[in-house]
Amino acid sequence: MKTTTIYLTLALSVVLAFTSCVHDDDYSIPNLEVEEPSIEANTTISIVKDMYDGSLVDFDEANNGGELIIEGYVVSNDEAGNFYKILVIQDKPEDPTAAIQLDVDVTSLYALYKPGQKVYVKLNGLVMDELNSVLHIGAADGTSVGRISAFDYDDYIIRSTVVATIVPKVISPSEYNDNYINMLVQIDNMQLSSAEVGQPYANADNTFTKNRYLKNCEDNSQTIIRNSGFADFKNELFPVGQGSIVAVFSKYNSDYQLFIRDTEDVMFDSSRCDPLFEDSFSSGNLNKWTTYSVVGDQVWYYNTFGNPNDSATMSGYSGGNKANEDWLISKAIDLSGVSSATLTFQTVKRYAGNDIELYMCTDYMGGDPTTDGTWVQLSADFDTNINSWSSWTDSGDVDVSAAAGGNLFVAFKYTSTTSASSTYEIDNVQVFGE
Image (cartoon, rainbow, N blue to C red; front, top):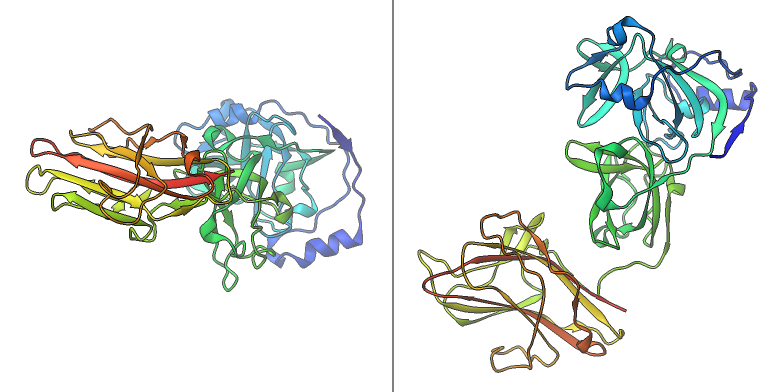
């Protein structure tokens, strides 16, 4: 851990910056001179968080009324306007184990509590509760957590002379969990969702907070990045490349989300990892596909249910089990510029019936697939749990490199009989090339 000890001196420019950004009732003018306080932490953020049992914690009643003091390092920064009247601290500058949010009725907190600033927090006189899955510490406001007053917040949040270098904790989307809430994290191999390329960070024409969606290039998962309509970067276009993002990790109800401090936290300086073909069926149709019914009246159709929404769906049941053979065939996928290619998708199966089959072809002309084209059956992982609509199964990486240099057609062949007809949903079909 690398730390730097500094002594902050009273500077007119800092005071002006501080006072110009806040309302008169948001603060009392602070003394920016810092001396190392005569104070020591006697508990940890982790222990304090463990005090929460589902209801408001009054720290005057905790620890039998004894004094409670925690220490931490600031990781938030409200200078760009993406944080508002909150201070986020974690227990260590590097490889933290716990973090917490402090609600403070002051703006421009960055003038006093810059990222890396070590602080001591006197908890007596404060309370803690959970709001939308995130623990907050603040002043009592009836039976909930309010903001610590602008007139005495510095009696509770006391600065050290130490300002440390914060090293973001590197995590991947598959590792997301509540332990990381309020920590400064770094997530690699991220890019803006292709549907949002060309959009600004937030709403350019109003002050509403905006969710943008990031895609991870390793597992194709989606992460919310939440940007304030008051952020000074809200009109800037979101970078279109791929790379790393540093952010304060958070959660809203069941959704994990990220809050950046400013645009320097977004380092998307590599080429995007967009697939050559992609269909999550969010367009509300099957326009990227040809549906061909060989036997039976039932056909592939667009469905509003999927993972998480929308899919291509096929069932041979209509008032009873019906005999069917139906193909869902992609339009031509251009692989002329690649030497290898991989197909991925997800399936869910409901009810007993024949297993779905996967095929590829390079010479399909749009007719009856039983006579048109040279189809090769492929191996993939399909859902086998017929008792759940939520057992979505990843196909794994399916090698379709045999079509590299030309056109690829992918087909899902569904069959049912008069004795058994399953329902299949297909979603998130992607083809990647190199």
